[in-house]
Each structure stands twice: as structure tokens, then as C-alpha cells.
Length: 356
Image 1 (cartoon, rainbow, N blue to C red):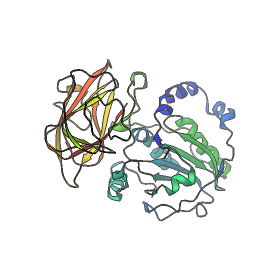
Image 2: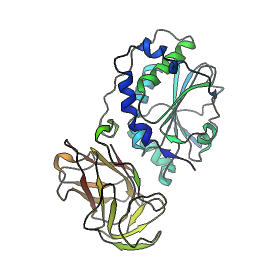
Image 3: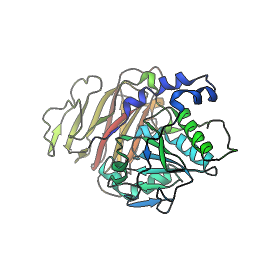
Image 4: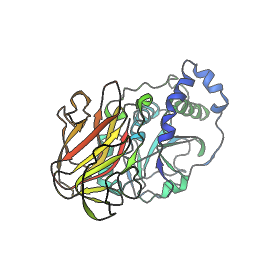
């Protein structure tokens, strides 16, 4: 399946914002790219296994409304950084004829768990309709390939615009306004939304981001330096004396599975050498309801002011849910750093590192 989080598209977001800076809305709307062509018909939403915050919606039932489809999966850092804008658009234009629909299509197997999706919807303050697309039916109907992906449909049910990845928020909102105006809606505020993201939703520090996302399961991992790995089998690993940038290693009793690495005895560690302001780790307890204590070090020391939102200054934290954890948010200057996390209890599964 040709799916991926849109990292490269996100990197150029800063350049796109620079190109639009200082230009009036009229100038931007007059740009050829602002003329919205017909890209096709709004595909069926019938493949959803469940709907949250709404009864099932259909293209026919949405006629007369401008529709924004937002493909997401709840551990995707690129999508999390777009969420403040999608929430703001949903709130600003909900009484003007816009319907925002989040289509949750899972990347990891645990994201198919409907209870996990419900918790994410609540925790992330998503109150617009969500189609749970665990079987990829809506994804295939759109021929989509990315998280996040935005598709804009007019009041006649025709797709008129799309955007993949982060950025171009001004252009996306102007597309919404153009489609609302075409539908005959008038009187909505013509200014653009202003957001105040916090925590995981804060935009990446693109100028200092030199570490790409990396998965830990054997199916997609890169730059794993611990010798003797046998896919799917328990092994005892040791950390090398030194890691190259964007390389990682294990110590302790781990199994390298298809999607994740799984710890079988307390004291296991993961080390990663990275260059970024933020470091996140997608992880969770292997058993529902369990908790796993851990401690983070950066360059061999407690993180202090560089701690992320899910740990304290001493580096202490607890894994209680299957989600993305923010472990490092360091102040400048940003340089190559060595991250280590030691798990004080067994039973954790770690899936992917992402950076910001």
C-alpha cells in the first residue's frame, strides 16, 4: 500500500508561507492557482465502519454545503500540526455552510481500535463529524496516499481543490471562502483565522529539522545499528559506543516485530542520535490497562529545560496509552544530541520516532 506521512511536503511549508507573506487576499485570489478547477465528484463516504459526532453522511445529503474532507490518523505529527487550523475553520464557518469531515484512516494496527479513536477525538477537542475508515474504503475511493490530506468540495458535490501535507493554510482558507461565495453564502468574516497552537500542535522548527521520521518495526525501519537482530524473535541487545546522526539502537531484551519493538524485561533502552527541536515517540503498553514507567536522558543527563510535554525535568514519564508522546522540546541552540529512554517496567511497544 503506497501510504506515507507527508514529511517532504511539510518541509516546504515554510517556503510557501514566505511566498504569500505581505500579499493581500485579493492578490492571492487573483493568482492562477486560486482559480479552482473541477477535479471530480465527491466520492462515497459509505465505507466508514462508524461515525463519531454525527449520523452517517453522504454526498447526496451534503448537497448545498461546502465540504472539507480531512484525512488523518491520530499519531501523525504532520496532521497534529494542521489540526488547529482545521478546528478553527470548522468553528468559524459552521454556520456559513461549511461541513468539515475528518476521515480517520489508521496507519498502525492499534489505530484501528475504535476506543483509541474515540479517546483521541475527545482529547484533541474534535467536535466535527468523523468517519472511521479502518478498512481504507474511503481512502481508496479518494485514491488518497497521504496523512494529512485535505479535499475541498463545492455545494454541487464537485471536488475543487486539494492539499497534501502541512502549510498553505491561507490558500486553503481562501478556497473555503471562494466555494462559500460561489454557493451564495455572504456575510462571513473575510479575514483569516488566527491560531495559538500548544504542545504537539506547534509548528516544527523547520530551519533546524535534520532528522526524518523513522519507524522501529522491521518492515520499515532504517539505520538500526544493534547487531544480531532476528525479525520476530527475542534477542538481547547492547548499545554501541557511538551512534551516527539519525541512527538508533537497543539495549536489553527486545523483540523486533513487524510494526514495533517490544520489551520483555525491565531495563531495556532505546537510543537515537538526532538533530531537531522536538523528539516524539509513538508507543504504548502491550496490554490494555497496563502502565510502563520510563526515564529519558539527553546526552547522558536529565533533560531539564529540554523536557517534552509528557515527561518532567528529571526525564520521568509513564506510558499508559497507545499514542504519540512528546519527550524532548529543547531550547536553542539546536545541535546534534543523543537521546536515550530507559523503561523501568517490561511490556512496552515502540513504533516510530518523529521530529519537529
